[in-house]
Length: 76
Image 1 (cartoon, rainbow, N blue to C red):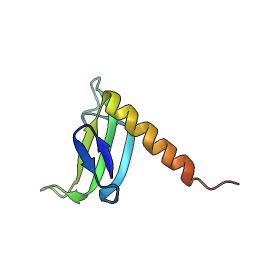
Image 2 (image 1 turned 180 degrees about the vertical axis):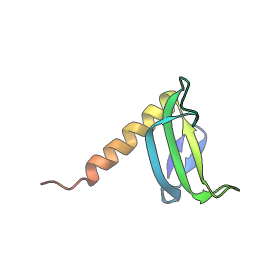
Image 3 (image 1 turned 45 degrees about the vertical axis):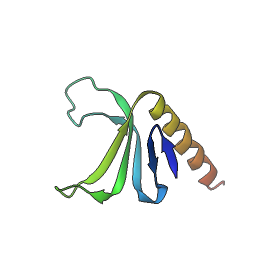
Image 4 (image 1 turned 90 degrees about the vertical axis):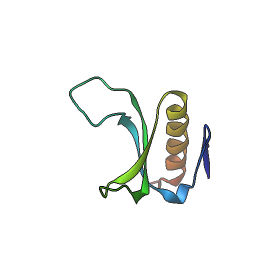
């Protein structure tokens, strides 16, 4: 389990994570950068449900997932 603010996320429910996501999918304007967590459940349109985090919560998630990734990397 991962606690971010008042949310508790089951790690096995995460499909993948975008560590440099934009808040909006519109590409022609300046947007808030953050972390988007894609879950293994779909919305009504068949897209993966997502959670977007910015600010200190996004920094926490980046540090967490980068440290976990470093532990999982296979050495040469």
